Length: 322
Ligand SMILES: [Zn+2]
Image (cartoon, rainbow, N blue to C red; front, side, top):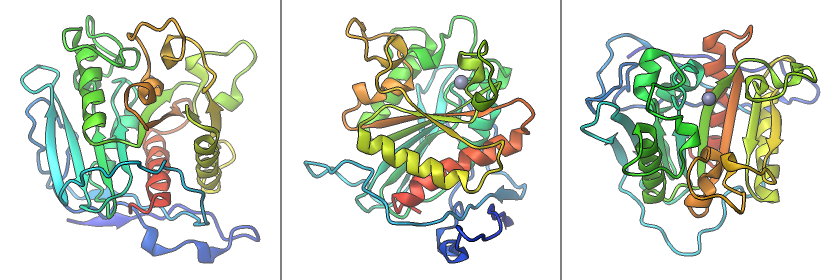
């Protein structure tokens, strides 16, 4: 397999000592099966004979405060290896999850792509991340959570429900309510500490005008719901990633810990149906949810996917998983 490594960095400047960039931290030289673009409802990952480009990102490394809460009780450590899982096997919307276990206790990170089928930067990035192998903890990737919507290039399909408004899901609900339940079950099973849900918006958050609020203008943002320590750690991550991005691409951190409404499951009247992935910490004890949005306007699809990969790579690198 031909693997081309693309380093993303700016020239070393007075505030960016080059010594901080180290090849040991390169991402993505993952072995194992390739999860090809056609991952679908068969549960089998087709092998691609085509050379794959694995984008590796070197990031500045600096001492970090712990970002993962200490675990009170020992968790079972899955044996090292890769595992292919089918969520909702047997249904037409069954989709694949790739689990990479290091065999060593460490962070458990869940990555979601394809929650919305018309946001390809997220699911293209997730398919690449599914190839990564971790050296500590576990990485669990669901590249195309609403797989039929990705084929249709639509947010979702009629009657399926919007997956990002279905948590914690229901076994007997519409298809995406069932998928939300399957994702929650998977996160609980692996004791996920962190969930990264990769999306796309249209406009850039920093370029919006006063009349352009709402989810169509949250491109280039990272939103988290968590403790102050956790949020500060995510801000640090974003600062590091921003060092690698152009002025226009700069990411904005959005804190929604005090958010109200169904999307966050923080509303005291919340009845347990209809939340976004930012609610996952409510349903999976100890899990920190992060929602990443790339801006589609005037930003090529491959670049959006690349920035998604860079963010996840930074989160995993900081946790010494790569
Ligand atoms: Zn979305």
